[in-house]
Image 1 (spheres, rainbow, N blue to C red):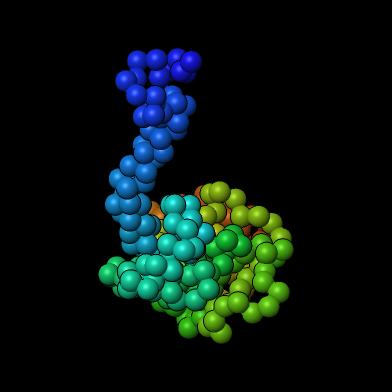
Image 2: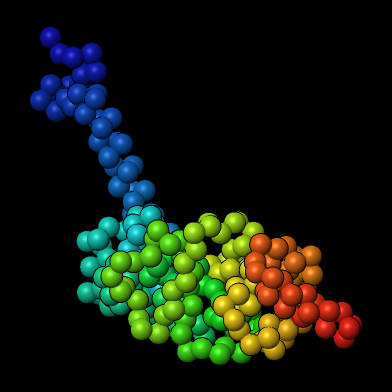
Length: 239
């Protein structure tokens, strides 16, 4: 006696059990979805890389559905350039003005690193960079034990996690807020004229308010608080 789903079949030899037919339909729908999503995946990868000076990590690609094998295929096909282990650049994305900063930040982004200090100050255009090094801040517990960055990278560590309002996404990277950046630069002993100039520009263009800046240095040393207050007084005097 034939199975219920084959009761109307003319030839039992060609009868396919219902559960097999359902599995095939699901498999075919999955494959169709995969075929249709290739263009979408590539578009998402391009959008991600374009916002990061063309760079992306293997982990980021994996989140978009790219396996290690598919990345190797795209490298061999000339679509993607392998920069270093787990680090890639999408061919065809225009080179940005801060590509070196984005690249170094991405290397340590999994360790919760953010662009900071002189580098962040320069990105905000609050003061010209006084250093050829790229400054990054990350949790002290996440600092690499062995050197994993270029010699032109200066790593700063913190034992207090950065608050959400102390980090922002701009220029294709995560960096410290303007208020936190000025506080950090003042804290490491920058020339007072740099802090005063940066404060004046930040307040003038509405990037930070005096209230926000005072809050940023509230727990810093007396020297830092006095320097920032002096900078704010000079800003007020010029207004």
